[in-house]
Structures are given as structure tokens and as C-alpha cells.
Amino acid sequence: MRRMFTMFSLTVLTFSMAGCSFSNAAVKPELSESCLELRDGVRFNVASGNKEEAYYDMMKNKISQAGFKLSDPHERINDAYAGKYGGTNLDNLGFFSITDDKALRPLLLKDPSIGGFSPFNEVIYKLKDEDRTYVGHVDPEVMLDIVGAKDKEVRKGFKAMFPKLDEVVQKSIGGEVKYQKFSQLAKKRMIRFEVPIDRQKELADIIEAFQDRFETAFEDHEFIIAGYKDFKEIYNDLDLPFDRYDAYFVYSLCHFSFSESIFNRNDKATADGRPDAGVFAPCSMYMYIEKGGDKLEIGMPTLENWIAVMGIKDPKKQKAIEDLDKEIVEIMKNLGGNEI
Image (cartoon, rainbow, N blue to C red; front, side, top):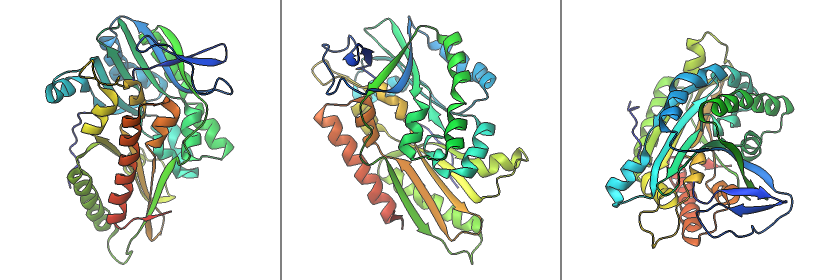
């Protein structure tokens, strides 16, 4: 089974002022569509200077103080953009997937949809023409609303993971905390599928066969398997009960040319890149089998959430996002998934 992953895969940052949202210096300031009832969508530490070394030290050595573990680091994606597309306005773009495994376990046992942001990305980016570094993540309440988590204890426990993480980021990166604001969530927030399985066969063989077909299908459509996390295996190794599931694992997916079209700008004549939207990348697609169950259940937040939460207005970027959502659905249907 192939589980060796590589990845080549933010900057119109909107701040709140007097109840309205305004863009940063990357573009001419303008009012958002609505100045009312704005919510915090993404939290960024915006610090003067290049914080690359401080960020790497934090992710590799300090986030464990907050209970988090680094899963799949993808450093300097901007270098791959420059090499393949001939240029970039980015001085840095990095995706670092993290989870608090112990805190997550009771939450996953109550609500498997939490896997839609487990892992999630603590992104870093810096523009070449700005002496500022941005480090941030999607607001946990927004994550919960996107996956549709309703249980009060699950929501409380999930949000409780973040203050310690944010404290570590503040100490390591510093700067001013800014929030990307938005007014409403996407209409379609999740895609969900069921794949029937034959429990007369060995479960390990069923899972391996499906994973091989899944990885091949997505790679054939130019996706990159940017990460893989087997929570069932993790909790078995920790001797922690995870008995609700016979299997529970999460794939991290990225599409390199798509991500470049959203995050990068390689020519001043083209539309601005949106590396701030990198907080949503790579996408987490969770898969699980209930104990004794006869189907593999699958879920993933739609990319449409990027448009809604990040306020992406460029029609070309909107179409690229909508088209990739459709492509993911078609791939899953061809793999035998029934959309629910």
C-alpha cells in the first residue's frame, strides 16, 4: 500500500473596523457586501519581519506544549510554484497539519464529522513586497459549523483545544491578532458518501483495496495525497479505547495546479493571489466504519467554504473552486460512493 506523500501546493486579508470589513494593502480598500453581523472566520497573527525560522521552531518544538502534534509539514510551497509556473509573489507559503490527538478522541467518539478539520492547517505566508508574516488557522467555531457539529459537549471540547495553541503562537510569532471576517457560511458545507462493503471478507483487505483505488483515482486526476492519519491505529498504540469504530482514518488532499491558481500570483498583470485561503488546505477527508458496520462512511468540507469564509470575489477563482468540488464528487461516485 502506498502511503508516501509529497506536496506542492492568503492576499486580501480583511480586518474589522467599525462593524465593516476592509481589505489590507494588497488591494484598494473596499467595503464588503455586508457590514452587519460579521463573524470571525480566520485568526491570524500578523507580525513584522520574516518569521520563518520562529515558525518552524514553534511547529517542530513548541506546539506540543499545547497538546498538539505535527502530522504532515509542507514547507515553502512557494518555491514549487516559482519553479513550475515561472514566478511567485510569495516569499513563503507553508501548510503544517496538526491535531491534539488525546483531546480529539472523546470528540471523535461522539461525532465523527470532526475529522473534517482533524488535522487542520496552521498556515504561514509572507508576500515578497510586505515585511510582514501571517500565521493562522480557521476559527474553531467555524470549523464546527461547517462540519455540522451540534453536540454541546463536542463543541465545547473542540473549542477548548485552541486557547493554548493560540498562546504558543503569540509567544513564538508575536505581532497583532487580526481576524478575517465573513457574513454567512456556504450553502453546501459538506460532501458525504457511503460506500457499501462486504463484511464476509477480511476488513483489512477491504480497506487496503479501497485505499489503493482511492489514491490511484485521485492521483489520476492530478490530486496529491498530502497526508494520511489513521486514528484507530494511533489510539491503539496509545492503549486508548476507540471502540465505536472498526476503522477511522483521514486523508489530506491537494490539487497543485488548482492551489496555485488560488494562492499564487506569478504575474502582476494577473488577479491577486489569495494565500490567506491556505488555512483551508490541504482538505481533510475522513473515512470510518462503525463497529460491525457494512459501509465506509466518508465526509469532507466543500471548497465552497473558501468562497464564503474568505470572501473570494474573483469569478475565475470562484469557478475553479466550484469545478473542483464537482470533480471530487464525480471521483467518489466512480469509486462506488453514494452521496448522502
